[in-house]
Length: 136
Image (cartoon, helix red, strand yellow):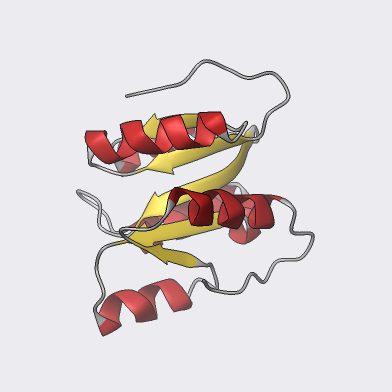
């Protein structure tokens, strides 16, 4: 598990992706944006890190042992505030991937994406006060 230094008062974002190099890059981007990222490299690890202190979930669709959309449903059953605060990311451009993500009602970034787009998308969902978020 990778983690960042805690930035007091910053929103905590749980990054769930099985590629350590992507996670490392995302941590750097989110820290520079003033967020408090923590990383899980698999759904089991992510499940152990879930808590009410997680303000947003940055979730890869393709994960070992479980698809990201399945983990989303498990996570949001325990922590309903994450329904409106999950941002998917994927390199899978298939119709199945698009369908799976659209069924959650969450936005998605298609890899690769610019850092500024990621930060803007996270800030938007962190500022949401309703449960339906439009896709990017």
